[in-house]
Length: 150
Image (cartoon, rainbow, N blue to C red; front, side):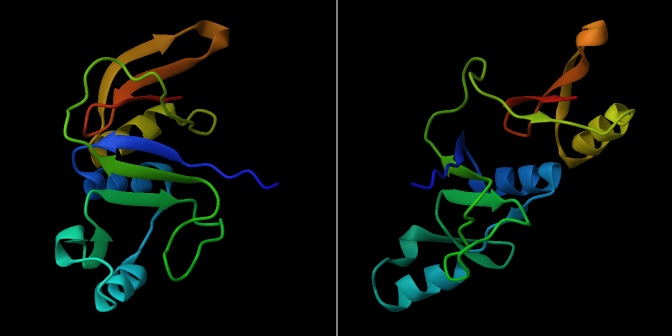
């Protein structure tokens, strides 16, 4: 048996959040345009199920990113390895995340990483210095989801 997984993140604007995380993690935004086109042409979905973002047709309310070195299905664009799926939900975020992403810099590169993430739309929340145990920044993505830059 082969185990596969994806991390699903609730959002209010899945394509925009996918763009942020693709840039932050150096992943690729999945492109389901071919599959969406086939399903539209066959009448299996209607235009109300589709949106367009950056010139690509997407399933409304969903966007995903995948690691650029992992395999993917060329028709659906769905990654078959490390991936994140963003799905729009009606409610906004409330409370602290119970699961979060840590983005790691190379040795001595924390400030450069934090500055790059801020340039993409993240915000610093607080700096944590645990001495030999570690030094990192608690940050928020553009929708307020907490993550750590270490």
